[in-house]
Length: 213
Image 1 (tube, rainbow, N blue to C red):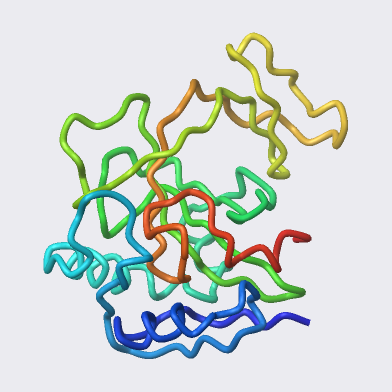
Image 2 (cartoon, helix red, strand yellow; image 1 turned 90 degrees about the vertical axis):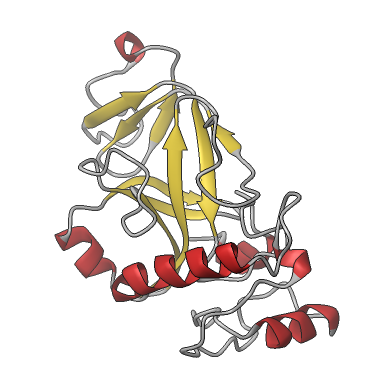
């Protein structure tokens, strides 16, 4: 069974791990350490200097605010986060707090978890926008996308261009309709699990061992 462990390390340790052929497997032992790291160059997308102090500060602030959720999905749920997707391959399960409306580094609207057996570990934080922000909320941020969709209470979703196309229950699972959203611009921030594709990349090849859910 793959072990879910936290992904925190100093920049030098991360760099050494990546350059020494860190296996794309969650069974690799990634020890939780209290230090806030500067991401290694290969973990950062976009033009930003990976040693930009402002990025390090943002990582530190995001981690300090969300550490309580690291391996405590029950607390996240108690604080208002509910499932909106099941496992998206190379990404994770998504949990949304609908009360969070604006960008706040300390309170992301979406938590992305990896799952193994009975264990859950927070991997990334996520924000969504209806259009690409005119001013980047994080240094060198890059964005992904998510199509318009109907979401259901069990984490299933069905692509739909308008809410009028959403059935009151999912025809396959029977779960109740919860909400619809238009096309979205997404911003992931992998502060709790390494991402060889970049700290802002939506897809993360290193979580592939958890794709089975």
